[in-house]
Length: 145
Image (cartoon, rainbow, N blue to C red; front, side, top):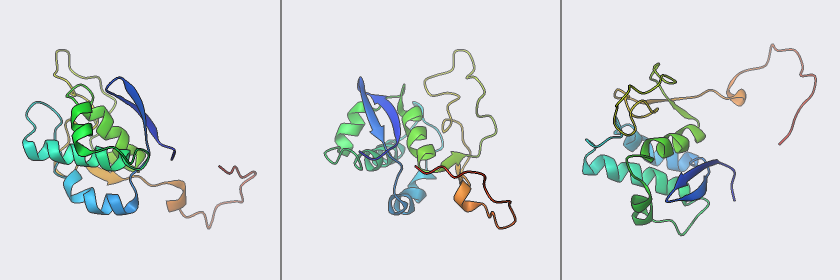
């Protein structure tokens, strides 16, 4: 199993690894189509959501199909599952309201990371490897994984 984020769908834990660069390249235009994860989603947005989650799941569970994922996702878990896949893949929403509690009485998925994003909902997250350390002092100790 590849390392990843553990998510719960259908009463079962699933270890979802990040998307590969190839998957990200292929799916990025579709990711941008997702603006809200709620009852107002159309058939296209549901298909995109299922395709993204299925692609990530298939890295650890080759038997996973879009039909299977479609039957595991619901409005109660779809936003959290999608966010686990995208953030685990190095993407994050641009919305500054993250971390705020959902409004009382808000519907399923409200206040979650991908639930209220404007067009262009994600941006790349710099990682330690993306930051130049040419002028930094040497590290005192190096930890390897």
